[in-house]
Length: 333
Image (cartoon, rainbow, N blue to C red; front, side):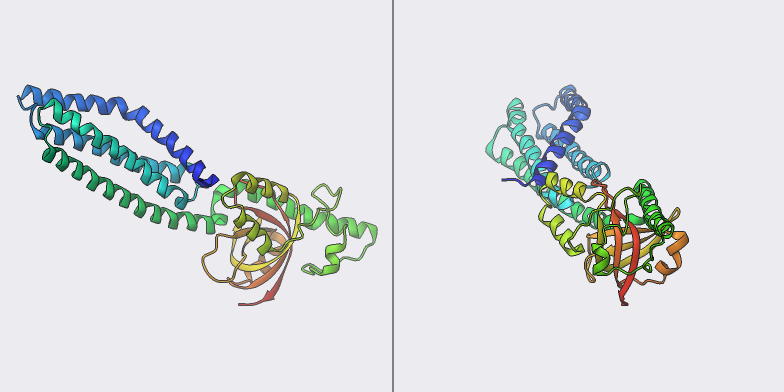
């Protein structure tokens, strides 16, 4: 039984294959007919050279198909994992080469050349090219996977995240200044920034939502709990999106390791990893107003362990950016 990620890849690839042949099918048939007409005009219709040219033509289009699928998947479906598509791509190509192989006996028969040794020779050649095409897909997916991982790890330096970052800046600004204004107006004592204690977690009036109407509900799990939940839902896209939506607007107090600090617009963003070592895809960004936090955040180093107090922004289709309220250094690298 296929998991949901495999089913999604299968559906996408099937649609892309259909679109490719819709664009190029008539062109291929036209060129195939031109090969026959050319060999007839030269009196060479009943030769293996005609069959070789026809097989070569169809192979060229299969190579184009393979490249078109890889390019479309990477550029148009950035959320799709390469590892979820590799097997499906190879199976699609194997099916296309099998269909090509089944055409050869008919071509040979039309030329009165349907002999076992000739047929076997052509089929072996097609199988060889099929194996090479599948290996090329494996190599292409490996390189694609490297690029996919790098984009996921460095997403917070990409201008594509303007909307998410903009929302984060607004939430961070309101989350930081509005509660303090309310506290000063009411004469309440203000806790120093970065004091993320157990008692503060129980204070339902500590931080309001961006309208200052009601407290932001807590997500009680740790950063590792959150990452573990996403991992458990890796192949269940619908449930994963529902979980991410449920996180929208919740306040989190998470520990993690600094992956980098960058700046965009009026925000300074800390990339936060769930694990200290290794290549981690489990990165979130925590956005703070640059005017208040820039100096402190740039004093952090990659690998420092920190604790953040932040509001989770619900952007299910993007890597999340959290609106930071405070950040404390737990242990320097």
